[in-house]
Length: 72
Image (cartoon, rainbow, N blue to C red):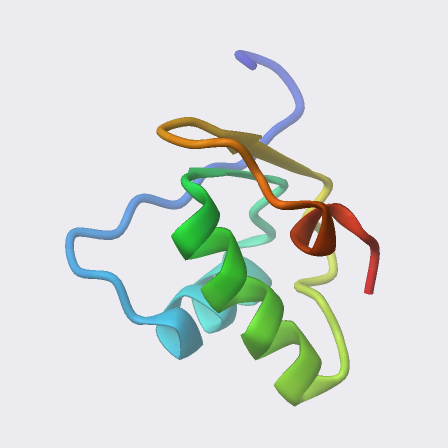
C-alpha cells in the first residue's frame, strides 16, 4: 500500500462527509468494518455514484454480508 494509493483518515464518522472527502481527496482504499461499508453503500446509492477513485475496501471486525459485496 505504499505506492499508488491515497488514504483519508477520519476522527469522527459521518457517511456524507466521508463520501465527500473520498471524492475530493481521490481516496482509493477504504479500511473499515461492514457497518461503515453499509453507510458508504447507502450514501453511494443516495448520490447514484461511488467516489470516483475508490477501488478497494479492506474489511475487518466481522464478515461482510453478500448484499454489501455486490457492485452498485
